[in-house]
Length: 124
Length: 106
Image 1: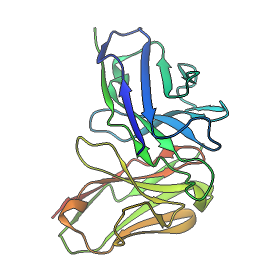
Image 2 (image 1 turned 180 degrees about the vertical axis):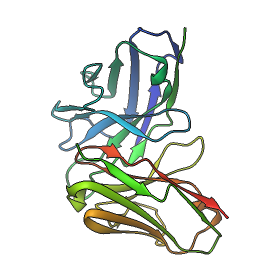
Image 3 (image 1 turned 30 degrees about the vertical axis):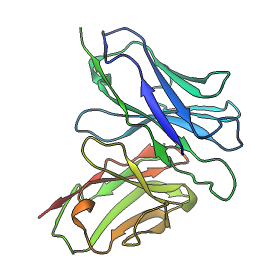
């Protein structure tokens, strides 16, 4: 069973750097085709894709946020970390991580399994 | 940059009715990269459709996806009470999401 869980601070101050961790189980981030992405959702608004990291360490970023965000995976490959600099109140949102299956019979170009999300408020 | 526009913004229907949701891309995209998700209040999105027309595991057959090029459709053949939610399309090639369609009870 694949699970993902986001963790990080619930409250950050403007200009601070946010660091979020996605801890996952049930799959390997070293398997071909596998990826983990970050998506956020401001209160009452739509989903916004932020970043994606593939099994081979290929990284992709939202064009509108690429100067502020960094995605990485740890050496044990059971966590993916997102950092976002210079936080602003407009970054207040629920942040989700999600799993893209690897290549093979179960391959899908979609986020098949999502974490429950972690709510982040930016306020002084 | 590909932009996905979903219509209508809100769909007011009764249980048992058919729902037709549209997702239009600003340029032609591969059908392999078009996905649909359902989101209920306070929950994470759930994958419904991938590759424009393939139902994800456990998704009832009243949900179907179709389309190609720039125009894609999610159809719910007969709305069940649990289907009232917000639906998002996503282009997985650029990973962008549409703005969502809310299906509400009339």
